[in-house]
Structure formats: C-alpha cells, structure tokens
Image (cartoon, rainbow, N blue to C red; front, side):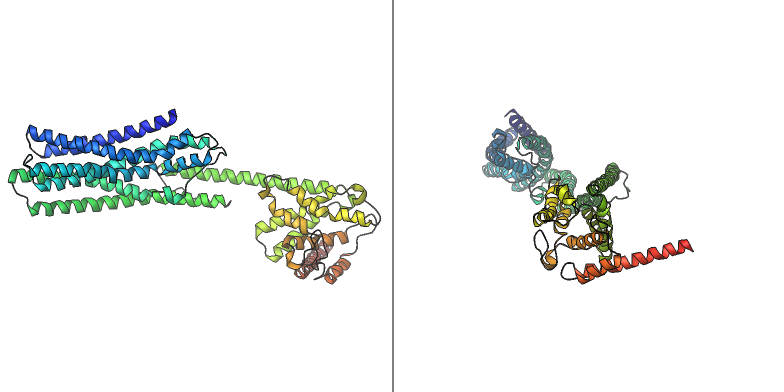
Length: 506
C-alpha cells in the first residue's frame, strides 16, 4: 500500500498548495490590496475565509474520498483480481476530469456559499461597511480563481496518475493493456488549449478591472456605467484574441497529430505510408522517426517474404523429390494457378496467396506411405482411401504453423483441391460454388499437370488430349469458367512459345 499512500500524498499536496495559493495568494491579496479597511474588518474577512475553507475541505473531502475508493481497492487487491484492478485503472484515467468537476462544483460552491451568507449577514449588521455589489464581485473573482485552480489541478493530476496506472497494469494477471473507451477519457487538445489560453488571458484582466472598479468607488464614492462599458470592451477584446490564438495554436498541433494517427491506422492494415517531413519543431523528429521506422519495417517484411517464399519452394521441392517422376509438379501447378488468377482479375495479393497455396497443395502426401505413393500398379480401395486423405492431412499440417493467421489463407485451397463440381470429390463432397475458388483453380491446374506428366506406369499424354478431357469434364469435375480460361491461357502460351522458337531458328 506504500505506492497508494504515496499517490494520495501527491494528490493532496497538489490540491492543498493549489487551494491555498488560489484563496490566499490570489483571492486574498487581490481583496486586501483593492479595499482599504481597518484591522477589525481584516479580522472579520480572515474569519470568513477560515470558516469557508473548513466547509470547503469537509464537503470536498467526502467527494475526494469517494473518487479514491475504487483506486484504493485496486491497490489492495491481489494480482488475480482483474476486475477490481481494471475498475481502479478506469477510475485513474478519469481522475483528471473528476478533479475539474470537483473544484468547479463542490469546491467552489462550498467555499462561496458560506462566504456570501456570512458576508451579507455582517454587512446587514453594519459590522462591515461594504456595498452589496462587492459580494457579487467577490463571487465572480472566486469563479475565475476556481477555474484557474481546476486547470492547474487537471494537469498536475495527469502527471500524478500516470505512475499509478503503470503500477496497477503490472498487477493484471493476463498482462492486459487495458484502456477504457476513447470517448470516456479523451479531452481534445483544442479544448484544453482554448480553456488554458482564455483563462490566462482573461483572469488577470478581469481581476484588474474588479480591483479598479472598487478603487474608483472608494475614491469617487460612486459607480459609473462608463467604467463598465470600457471594462466589458476590454474583456471582449481579450477573450476574442485568446480564443483566436488558441485555435491557431491548436490547429498547428492537431494537424501533425492527425497525420501521424492516419499513418498508424494505415500501418495497422500493413499499408505503410510515409509523409513528407515539412515541420521545423519537435514534430519534425517524430515524422523523421516514424518514416525511418516504416522503411525498416518494409525492409524486414521484404526479407520475411523472401524467406517464406524460399521455405515454401524448398518444402514443395522436398515433397516432389519423394517421387522423381513428379519432380517439379508443385511448381508447375503453382505457375498454372497464378496465371489463371491473373486472368480472372484477382487482386495481386490474392494471386500471390494463390501461388503459395498451390505450392503446398500436396503437402498432405507427406502422410501417405511410400509403398502407396510410389506404387507402380493400380491402387486398392484401401490404398486409394489413404491417398484421398492427403488434402485433410495437408490442412492439419498447416494448422500447426504459428501464428495461424499467417497461414490461414492457404487452408481452404489445400483442403478442397480434389473436390468436384458434381459433389463426387473428396474429402468433403462439396458441390459447385461451395468449393472455394482457390480449390477450383488448383483442381484444374493439378489435373492438367498430372495428365501430361510421365508416371512409372504410363507416359504423360499429349497436351491436346488433356485439353479434351478437361473440356469434357466441365461442370461435372471442374469449374467450366476456369477450364475455359485455362484452355485459352495454355493455347496462347503454346502459340507464343512456338513463335519464339520459330523465330530463333529462322
């Protein structure tokens, strides 16, 4: 609990110093300098201040205790009490806002109301010879002093709660980085800066005008409308320029922050965008650092992509090496599938995913014994059932890769590349468009390469014969659209290669 006690001591110190400075340092000095009174009135004013302060501390202390209760419970809780700790953290995030509300409501009212009542009674009893308007002036001054105190307290509380939040987050058992909803804690820079600058601009001017009015009243013995016409004009100009300056400064800060936030949102979707660094202040360092980070991430991603692709190539080559007669099969299927995907108009990232899926489409054959996989003759029903299990085996193998989300896009194509449009395929007997697109594409590419490749028990058939088989199997075994696209691609490809070969011989 030492951490909690230190936290509370820091809050109390901030509050007590701020309150005493506001009441005696600003309000008291302004009051005693502005009015000329005897020693007995000074004693009465001091008495009013002390009574009001005691009421204020009593009322505000109850509110302060209520605000601290969830935080105290969180500090006392064991490490496993996540709900209690999370409530404490949420309370800490909201404590700066609560401090403002506490000062502007119970703090201000519990101080002002007793002071006003006692002052009016003493004036009524002729114990203080002040106009009633002085009490109104004092209330306005108290409001401004409280607003300035609340602003200072807000920023001091922010500095105080940060270490406490870090301590409580370390107690969360699952290591959660709990954050309450953004709208519950977010106070825009424009609002904070606007209030701060307006208060700093208006506060001394208004206090000076009040003091001047009191002095004029004491000297001339009357209150003049002319003074207040002039005073309100001065206040209006002060407020106008304070608001204008705060808006200009806030926009100057908000623009780079919004740009950085947008860049971070893009980075979350792996769309790494860099912004031209046009700033000459500390934001210049932030943009330089962020852009440098993006460059390094892109370099690392390129390395990772190269490593993954190399790994997939090695894996497919190792699989093909089990059977010398099917060497290069996975690479050829991947190439055919990629070309189909491009003609279909798939986005480039999906074409790349299709290519990698095709490289691994037969990875499940690792689970098929060599005696079956390399058998020269016809397979028995039992042996064929083991071969038919390889798509599901392949999916299960890939599911072991961590993190799964990096490999999830491969799973459906690997599992479904032996499904048929008529529902007679395996392992799930899917029909038509129930079969994932990658599965339908790989099925055509895989069948064509299997038919045209040499096997121990037969010679690979001519391309034209394989085309005819694919054509005849449209709608029953293979997707008609994909077959038509593939036949068109292969025809153009062979024609192009023929023309290149003829040109080289001429």
